[in-house]
Length: 126
Image (cartoon, rainbow, N blue to C red; front, side, top):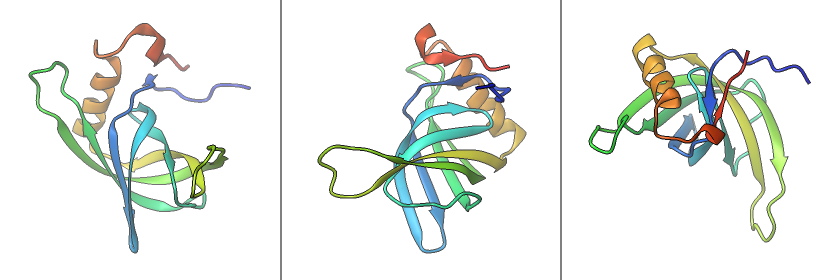
């Protein structure tokens, strides 16, 4: 498979809230980049669904303040997730950020590239 991503991404679990008229879903990222996120939800969100996204991005060090980032996104992929003994269906979804400020995008980019993770958690995409 050819890798199409152009942004650095990291396998980090940060709090994430997804919303649209009629629902709010609170979860955490499986991985994140400055252009999108991958996460698991218990709601079937069809591809091309437009959603509101709120991320809580940790500061660069233990002293730094967590930053709340609000943006808009679109679901670009959804896959059923098999979870043993789950009482609800789960789905892995990929979200592309469609409306994120340059400042917030830079915050996420800096977090992904920061020293808050080890080399095994960083993936360089070309």
